[in-house]
Length: 311
Image (cartoon, helix red, strand yellow):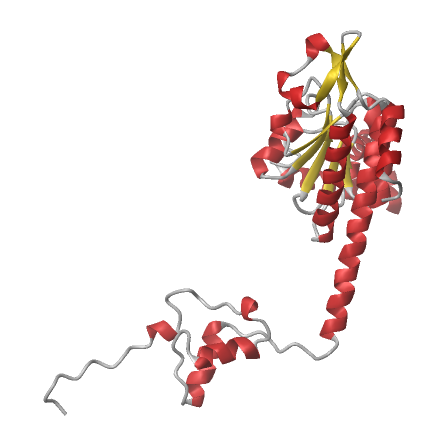
């Protein structure tokens, strides 16, 4: 971490992360995260904020190191700039203008609109747009700007994100519902008027303070960058291990059984020495497609039993 925990807590307090909403707007489920109230405004326990932020850092770092991406969602004015800047710095996806309904649950349509954006950009870059009329050029220009404004942050997202970070779950309730429906883990900066039960890992704090949002986003972006470094280190280790010797070509279970049967000699029953040898020759037993039942070895007819007294 770039700064110690004490410095982080001091920076959060200076940014006003501990100020909640008015007492009349609170959600009773936020009681464990509230320290008290002052001038009819709830005060959030900064220790809970720091604890949630450290847990979120660890979760994002492990998630990114495992090869998955993070989607940052924050469309309110206070969070828009921080989300764009920090998500771009760590190379993750973001939504900062407007969450389109079905961004996750109807991702095929979203990808179709992104393909349309690439087509329109190609028209303008290659100069083919000059062959259209003035009215058509203006219409295509408006369409391109609209798609780019809403979907620029998820342009490189080819698959479902491994984790979603949300600022203000009341405003982004559609995004939270879609993530929950698809089983995407959610981390959120929630204020005293939000429901923490909807989030897998809540970070209690002021979701209206720009400086507090910037600090939280910077910490999570640093965690994503550290996770990417771990991903690179794993790739380097895998390349060094693979340089020791070429991997044997993979063979399916049926092909392996036929090869052994053609050699004649070794029974191909399940659990036999030959099946173990096949897995060893293939290089990785987990990559060999060995059926659990009904495989080639189990379909070999067994000899009928000979009754007593028969030769």
